[in-house]
Length: 433
Image (cartoon, rainbow, N blue to C red; front, top):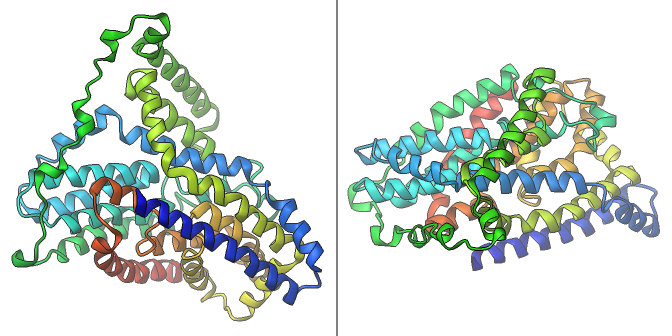
């Protein structure tokens, strides 16, 4: 937990430094005065409150669902399937890829929990590579069902609607180029993880006694002690079932009227009510939510600063100046790859897909408009750039590392290889497709 707090502190410092850097650029590159820059910053500071809450819920609902008893039991059964270390590495990679494509918060937790189960059941598997393989599945999240950029631009009244309009997921998540890139990574990542297996004399395993989950010893005997009406309600399976059924009824009505037209609100709604159902009682659900919320502090505090950055960039004219500079070094054939690479670089300073989109959207969308290229594809390039360098940006690895009991340096060597190989594949995808 100390590592997590330390890293959150550093990312908070990054956003403060970035604020002064962007303010300075606006003074140099535009006609804005210092007083005006401060007004732009403060005026935009609270403009992303709804978006911030949506991002918090993506993490919290995914994490809560992944920690439900049915998923933990399922992972234990699935961990009995592989018989060799190689099979274990491939399976954890595939499971993590699938789970992260569905929901990134869900995938991060599921991948780490499954890796622990495999370490407990498969002899001779390298624990570092097992956790790195689980984390490598996170690479596809922004091309999946919880991608913050594609879902944001598909949600009515999003902050860049005046530039790009409402973009359906058929043009982003379910577009041909995105599905081809996702499919290529589903094949490549398990293969690369399998090829990185160290020799027997270099394999590092873990004492299985360290993997026992103390929380599993605390069974839900609380129902037996429920004496008051309040206690009975907190531990009522019926109440959770009725609430969950209400949510599913709304989803059925939504699909009947709109089809599978996903946006951030609908994805969060699905995971929220599935979590209520699968945890069984209100008390268990809220305990799981309490654990999940701990990882959302960075989003809650940093996103208003990203909104302030966006306010400076848009209102001062800095976004227009930067987009014109970007266009000047781009051609129609290189534009898409350059957007992807630039987003990968920005991710080191803004380690959040939603926050990064708030910072980069004004620049990249204006540039795409000037180049007369697909703005939906440009948005996906920013999304993939953010996901790409997460392989060596340990911010989002922290939940997995906390579950595994490892440090970032234990897995970063493996993740670096995935970064180079996946970067080449994604770049080719945007250049050729």
